[in-house]
Image 1 (tube, helix red, strand yellow):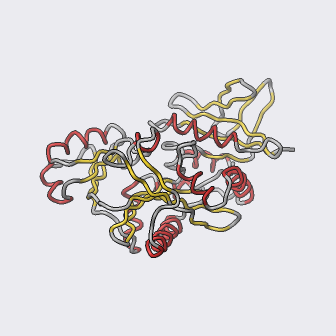
Image 2 (cartoon, rainbow, N blue to C red):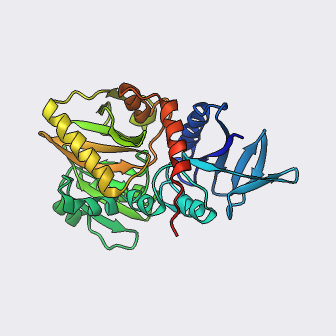
Length: 329
């Protein structure tokens, strides 16, 4: 009998629509000769499964549903939710409680990697180069001039827990800081302010494939705007070169740093990390534990460049989580 796989997508953040696209790509790449995959869509209002065209409420307590008097359960879950609750550990906790295996990071690791500041603090003692930063929240008493003096201008103001560059603003002038913080606070109650780094920007995937951690070919990001924002990522407002045009020494340093970040954070499955080169040193920006899988996304392109078909990677991830079905208490 085929294993029943739930491909969970959507979520409750601004990344909902992008996640739906990623989830559909996953569904399109799961061979129905091996698995019976069904889409599960999470929204702020409900969690629903599409069973033969019928939208049915999902029972979160055991991650099951009923149709015409029969109860259906899933053997595994492929998590394609960008943002909450897929990247912050909430969905993983639901699945741990229901004892349903899932792809990607554990709840604890997801909670850390979704929080940009916590990720940086965990990596800081281990020699990972990174920009100077300050964290504030919605209750902080902050002063634009003090922040600018401490971090310098230009700088980046980011929602601390968000993806796809939602809530990210590049600040060039002192008088722009307040509005930028307001933009970030619209996405999250914490704001990360980072010093500006000028150099070659790259994004690099690190995956587990066939039981081994593999570093993929990096992508060089050349944006037509100020930085790699939403328009650059999803609306073609950038040029992306895979593999990145790096020297052998730069590539060696990047591969070492990317693998080290993956291992130190305890990441599982697939990930994509962003770096900016200052000379030959890659400065870590952030890690995405559930990177996009759309036609515009970087990780599928990097996997292909590294000789790994996206469909093979997806099947390997499902098989891996079916074998290693350990759950956090």
